[in-house]
Structure formats: structure tokens, C-alpha cells
Length: 636
Image (cartoon, rainbow, N blue to C red; front, side, top):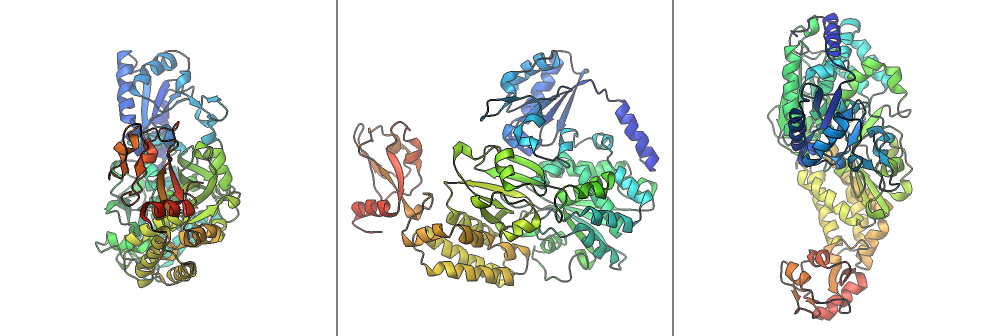
């Protein structure tokens, strides 16, 4: 196929692609995003190709390598079509029996399908697995159908049809009106109405305007943008071109983290294909509209996710935020009007134009429309990437989709919004997930990270961890963020070390409010959220750290001690050999002793002590003080 110069040619190309495909033909779809490759999907691909060649089936079975299918915990996995048999956590040696039974025959390899740990029921098809049942996969579903290196797969699924419709049948004002009617809000964290942002940028008079895709997701444990760029890059590119047409931009940038090599590779290839077939460059699809996209690899600074910092980085300056107003939509890249949206926002645009704003607006809640993609990680049974309708409750995500807490432990909290988000307690599990409700609870939607915590989590330590992260990632430009976060970390360190004072709690609240009010950008303005929400919902934990020197979760090293029960110890030497600082002494078949002055509290002794013996334990509070007093004559 040569360059497409008219929408009719695009429709002809799509029909030709579909005509070449045999619906009843056997097909093996292999999940191979970054998570899949890390788990061994490349070896599975090789094994499948070798086995098909061995059986003489290469010309009779289609092998499609796709992006992530979402259930990262079950990687590497594949699906056999047309039966839709889902096989999980595969090894190369599993492939021959899959080919023998499910390709040559019509049998299922029972040992390789999903089995629910709670009910012992097996699920053959992907949609029968509880992890997928309550999802509404508008954006991520196509990851199962598209080889991200082949533009033909995207065209077969109506790819670039929305662009063709916009260029030839809609004015720029009509495109923006459709986005506004749909109620699409920015998925990068702030939730600002996308149509309104586009309209502001469109109205600014300038002969040069820019479009930016913010793919610099830096939240620990978040990988929503990465998955979309790896699995379906053309959806993002098409959304950007439509947005450029709507505001009158001539040039665009995709700013992606350099730590995403597979995403970078797939986006670069997709851009080349888009240029080749006339979706980028001069006279797009034969129209008078011209637009080009460049890819920029970011250096990994967390603050670059803030749009004015990102713009500074593209310009070759240090990633410092700028005072707003003026907003980037008014004065952005190189001083010109610039529209910045994140990956997920852009990917929604073609979907809205294809299926209609009214269709999209029916999904979600009154003020939060559509779906949202979350990375579900932490102390939960089912980890992975989930796409759910706005308004679903936290309980449904944690228990119905996530399968509950690991090892049947109690749910304690969920943090939404990454390091700048808040920690929501168990009593608020029935909160609906939307921008406004999460904000009222003290958290944020953020880009979509969800970290699940169980009863063994110390919420003071959680606040300390995330404040340490944001303090290190602060660009240092403004005093409230640079100094304020440092002071918060120092106070939290004192509390977790057993040196906190009751006055510290009020100090942290006052300091947090000052940081939120006085910081220049969103990083500083939201940095205190972990402190404020843990103080609001878990204040008793702070008080126990300060008043009784007790960490009830047995996490804070300054408030715990390891001890060996003389009535249980059998002198097996396992703990002695595992201690990295030789703090344990004792002979074989004699009771061992821990020197508390040497112990670094690494927990190696507890890890190696056989469960049947259970001689090593962690203690806190009065028990810890008594042990340390007996060991050194000092009361702690």
C-alpha cells in the first residue's frame, strides 16, 4: 500500500486487510510488553515458532505478538483463537502440549489455565477470569488485537478513521465541542476538562502552536502510559493529530521516559509508518492540514512530569517549573500556545470521535466520564493493569478485581495518585473512584497508581518513604518545597527512630499546609498529601510511635528488636550463619543469643528460622525496652 491521499483510499485499505484475514484460522496471541518480556515472553515466542515449524504449521497458524494484556502477574501468557483459550505463567516446555492439544486438536491443557484460589474453579476464557470481569477495557482491549509494530492491525480496527472524519467532515470548533460534550478530563492527574483546555489554546492568536504528549510517568509502580505506548502507539498518535487540527498546531512532541526502551522503539516505528502512509507530514490524507510529531526521551526527573518543567526540558533547559499564569495553553513551548495532555487522554480522543460523545458520556459519573487505567500493585493477590469505569468503588477494585489481600491478611489502606497521593483507610473502601470524591478524601486520582497495603504496613513509615521520594525529586526552585519537604522528612525520621515528640504532629500539619499553599508547581502542592492523610486517618499510629515508642506493624527499625526464645531455640546455627554482622553467638545444639549493640535489624535471622521452630521474633514497645535494658543496662 502506498501513501493514503483520501478517506476513501483508507476505507479501501481497511477492507483489503480484512479480506486477507481468515476468521476461523487458528491464531496464537502472545502478550509481550515489558512485563511479559521480563517474565520470559520472548522465549515463549521462540518456542511457539519452533514448534509450529516442527509440525509444519507455520502457514496454517497466525502468531501475533502484542503488548501487555493487563494481568501482569500471569505473564508470560497467550491466547489461542478462535476458542479464546487463555494460558498463563508459561514455560517454553509448555508450548508443545499447547500446540498438540489446542492447535492440532480441540482439547484444553487444564493445568495451564487460570484457577481461582478461593473457589478452585477454572476459567478457560480471559473474560471469565475474575480479574477482568468488572473491567471496561475501552483503551486496553485492543492490546490483544494489535501487533504494535504493524500499522495494518490498527487500520483493521478503524484506525485513523476518526482523523479522516475530523479533517473532512468537521471544523476545529466541532471537534472541540465533541470532546467537551464527552466530558473528557485530563488523565495525567489534575483532571482539567480537556475540551476547555483545547478551546483556550485554539482562541489564542498565534501563527505557531504546539501539541505535547506527556509520557513522563514517574510514580513508583505506575506503568499505564508505558503499556499504551508499547501496545497501541497509533491510538496516541491519532489522538494527537486530531488535537493538533482542533487547536491549529503544526508540530507536536511525545516526551517519554528513557527508561521505557520498548515504548520508545514502538513509538518511533509507529511515527515512521504514519509518515509513510500519509497520516503525518504535509497534506495529511490529501487535506490541507500539515502536522509533524517528534519523540523526545526524558532523563528521568520526576518533576519533568509537571507540564511547565517538561516544556523547559524540551527546550533544552533544566526541568524547572514556571509560574502560572500564563498557562501553557496561552504561552508554552518557546513562548507559543501549547496543548499538553498525557498518553491516556490522547488515546481517548479517537475513541470519542469514532463512537460519539454521547456514547462516551454515558460511561462513568456525572463529573468524571469514561474509564480510567490503574496499575494495581502492593499487598494484593492480583497485580496488573486494570481499566475500570469511573465511579467503581475501591472495594470492587481491591476485592473483585484484585482478588483481596495476600495471605488472607487485613486490608489497611490504599494509596492513589502516587507519591503525591493520599492514603485511604479501610472504612472508606466503598468510596467511588472519581476525581472529586478522591479529592474530598484527601487523595488524588493522579496518573493512576494504586498501592495496596495490609495490616503489616506502618503508615508512619509509608509517609516517610513517600516524603523522602518527593524531597529527593524536588527541583529545588522554590523554598516551600525545597526546605519544607526536607523538614517533614527530618521529623518523620525522628518519629520512626523513636525520638519523636507530641509537638511534632502539629508542626507537620502546619508545615504541610505551608508547602501546599506556597509551592510553585503540583509536585510541591501535593507532596504533603501522604502526611496529611495518614495523620487524619492513622493518627493513633503516630501517637504510639511517640508516646509508647511502639510500631504496631513492627516495621520501624528504631522501634523494634529481634530476640531468640531460649525455650524454642534448638541451636541449628541457621540464624548465626545468616547474620551479616556476626551479632549472633552460640554453639550447635545450644541456645543462641543476639548482641543488641551489634544487631542492625536486617531481619535475616527471622527469615531463616524454620517455621516449625519459630524461635526468632520481632518485638516493640515495652518488650523491646526490656530486652535492650537487659542487654546493655540502658532503658530505651
